[in-house]
Length: 222
Image 1: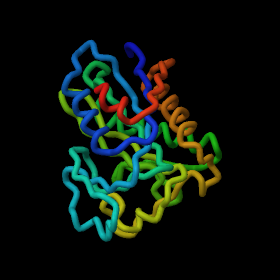
Image 2: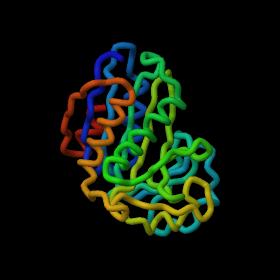
Image 3: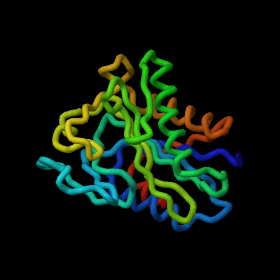
């Protein structure tokens, strides 16, 4: 692989401005643009994939519902959940979308194994599962040969909002989090560990980290 991706830690940022920033980054990039991986959290929000059915949102209450352009069905984002967005030139790396999905899943599986948790991906329902309960979700979009959207991992997120939806379109699907499985509740540390796993899986040896302290900086710079 070529130049290592720039890893940005964005902190807690609103969903829609971050999504639009990913779109702008993807639309403006060219063959020389450096890849980036964004690590962040979102305030509470339900998001629907392009083919998601609205009836899978059972009782959103005060939580906003956003229709997006990613793949997949309905999911929830909130504080305490790691979100990892891989903004990668797939054509440059000769990487297929299924390969990227598997790499994202494997990065979580490897992290879980390192703290004694047996987790696995599923071909029929992308994501990472522990004993039948979903720990991480994957939903991507590829445009102009480049990826955006990505991975969410339940670290210490409040699980109650997941009961308001059919998670990923599956009625009654259980959800779990690392905190309840004996893992740490430090989203930033988990994010960096999973990012390192992803880079190793994709063939990168190292990465450069760039801290961005505020949401306004994160989206205005894009």
